[in-house]
Each structure stands twice: as C-alpha cells, then as structure tokens.
Length: 297
Image (cartoon, rainbow, N blue to C red; front, side, top):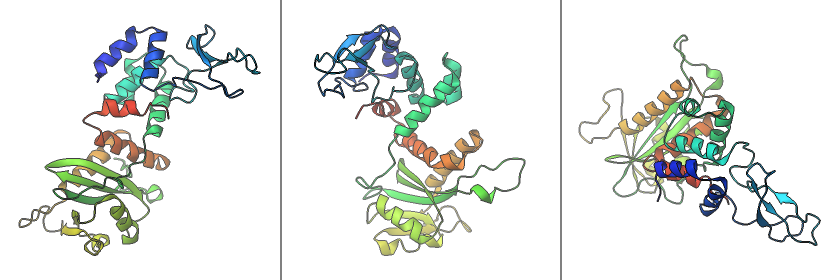
C-alpha cells in the first residue's frame, strides 16, 4: 500500500506511458476498450496527435471506424479535464492530504478554475452517506443526535436571514470518541421528519442521547433506549452522565467551516454535508478513500 509521498514521487518522475499503465493497474483508466461501431476490442497505440500521446485504435478492417483513434480518458474521472494526468493527480493528492482549495491553488501552477473543477468533480463522486447496511449504534455504542442551523451569521448583521434557512440533523456514533457521523438536511424539526431518518440510520435497541426537543419523545416507542438532557439546567446529567457534547462539538466544527467559507449557498448545502461527512468518516485514511473515488465502474 503506497503512501502520499511515494505516490507523488512516482507521478512526478514517471513518463507518460508509465503513468498511463499505472493508472490502468489502479483501475483509474480502462484496461480495455470496445469500438462502439463494430463492438470489437481496440488496440492500445502511440498517437502523437493525442493530448496524452496514447489512444485506443480500432484495427478491425471491416469496421467503418477502422484505424480511428479513441480517447483513453473516456468513461474515467479524467474525461473532460484538459490538463496532464500528473497535474490532475497532484491536485487530488493535495486534496486527499486535507489541503484547502486556496492552498492547493497557491502550491501548483494550475489555474484556479481548473483546480475548482477537479475538486467539484471529486465531491460529485462521493457517494451519498447511508448506513442502512451497517447502522450506527448497537451494543457498546452511544448515539447522540442534535439539529443545527447551517445559515452563516454575518458579523455586521443581527440574526440570520429566514429566506435561506436550512437545518441539518446530525447523528454521531460514540465510544470514548466519535467513530462515525451522519448529517442530512431536514425540511423541518417535526417528529414525522426526524424519526424515520433515525430509524433508517441507527440500529434498533441503540442507546440514544438527545436534548429535550419534543420531536425525540417517541424514540422509546420506536425500539430505542432514549435518554435526554435539559440544557436549561445542565449540560451533563450529574447522575446518569447523559449529554450531547460530542454531537455539539461536531456541529461547532461544521459551523466553523461554514464561517471559514463565508457561508454556503443554499443549493450547495447538501453537497457540503456529503463532503463534510466523507472527510470526517475517512479521516484516518483519507488518502486511499479519495483514490477509491477515481476507480472506473
């Protein structure tokens, strides 16, 4: 298993053919290609007029596309990005090492728009967070749940604009520390909105800690061990230890990031949450988690 350093050293020193073959080995590029015209496998050829100097070529004499060249980037993450593989991979590498976009732009001689395009494409490849096949909680874990407002509060204004109000439901799995997180936008804070989400993502019988919001009052009837804390009087129950401090710390980290970005546009908040959860849940091996996004189907 390679490290970010060994990966970067290789992509810097490799020639074009070595890098293309390596990307095929990693399943980032297709290892074979079928001519769409004759349905016969094409050949891998050197092609100086191609941007990458290599292309697929149909060598079926009976085909109307005989000797035609086809782009090796087709159906891969790299399709539509018109810079060399090395430059694309270096952007991805720095993103996978948790560098922010402005730092990536400063460290590479690549246009800011291209960096943004690559990162946007990466985020688009992140799968929707869904723990239905491996639910949060269960024996030995505590689940904490809270809602948070995603609106950016400007210093020069009082309060937040109600016009672009967005609430997120945040669920964390906890055992000594936060192990996994799930966040999703919610239309409102009503029980009929929140409870089905919790039932889908949290294992039945799990111990759940929340505040005293009335929407959580039916959790016990839905097969959970539910305890709550009244923040009006205390933040940690002195007798039972019930609290929501872990999920609130996650909410604070999210709000700090939103503030750093000077707010998130309403239409981009779902994508922001998806990326936020992906980065957090893969924080111990983000490099390899990001590289998995590049694999061809």
